[in-house]
Amino acid sequence: MRTQSVITLEQFIIEKEKSNQEATGGFSQIIRDLMLACRIINREVTKAGLVDILGSLNSTNVQGEEVQKLDIYAEKQLIDALKKGGETCAIGSEEQEEIVILNPKGRYVVLIDPLDGSSNIDVNGSIGTIFSIYKRISESGEALVPEDYLQKGRNQVAAGYILYGSSTMLIFTTGNGVNAFTLDPSIGEFLLSHPNIRYPEKCNIYSINEGNYRKLFEGVKQYLRFIKTSNEVKKPYSARYVGSLVADFHRNLLKGGIYLYPGTTDKPSGKLRLLYEGNPMAMLAEQAGGMATNGYTDILDIEPTALHQRTPLFLGNREEVNMIHNFLQVYDQISQLVTNNLGKEKP
Ligand code: AHG
Ligand code: MN
Ligand code: MN
Image (cartoon, protein in one colour):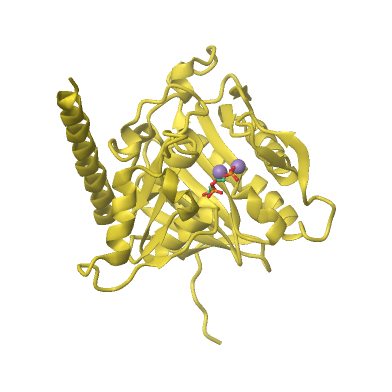
């Protein structure tokens, strides 16, 4: 029989802790807490078609969006696990208007999208949990201050997601590359399956809700026209979009691609949330050799002003993200010139 050495998530965490002189084990505890919660969420997700957990609660979240039962269930598991673990002082969640204090002595702040892509639940599509971890700025035991959770993405100590897809996977980074672990359901362990993930050099996928085309800004429209019609593009791009950031990001990370959720004329800040969607994905992208921008600024350099603030998001292969950045600048300049000239013609 051929034996292959496997590395479990637990072994991986212990090894990393050993190699980090400053590690106190607190951070590892948070990863363990998250994984415990996600195993339980995974169990419910996989039986969602069987039990009466499907469908919406007929309530809306703080962003005015319909909340599915599993969003609430997932959030409860995450809050319970992080509270018991003791290292998390506060959690910010898509489903809670305000930051929730868990352990005043905890040294970390965790921001979560408990269930991402929740419109996919009823159709058995891939969904995920996204997390972002910061060290608090205030001293342990002191009152939490907004600066503790309104930190720019660059300060994240770790970020990642769990993808509940055809397999369940954990993908995370602590700022030293990106590693993916796949849950082996027969032994209940996450095993290292994709060490040190890097974006493939070529970007041949674009992921956008193109139904919004008419509401897009000119730079994004011209970029889309370019990749679909220009002779300079030798191999046609594939359009892939399932409406779940985790699933769309994951495909693009492994296959090479760009994810776009731009601002639109009616919603210039777009739809996605900076703190628990944009920032964690941006850190993963950068650690895998890619990048993320809001079209003008690197996502990781944006100073947040509110827990649920939204951001336009362009995320994926570095060159492709730079290309869209250039399209936006050029078409902004053109529209500025047009506006100025029209102004001059006025009597
Ligand atoms: P959530 O389920 O956490 O509210 O997030 C949904 C997000 C994101 O996952 C996805 O990419 C996007 O919304 C889809 O939006 P559209 O349906 O507007 O394309
Ligand atoms: Mn989401
Ligand atoms: Mn969500």
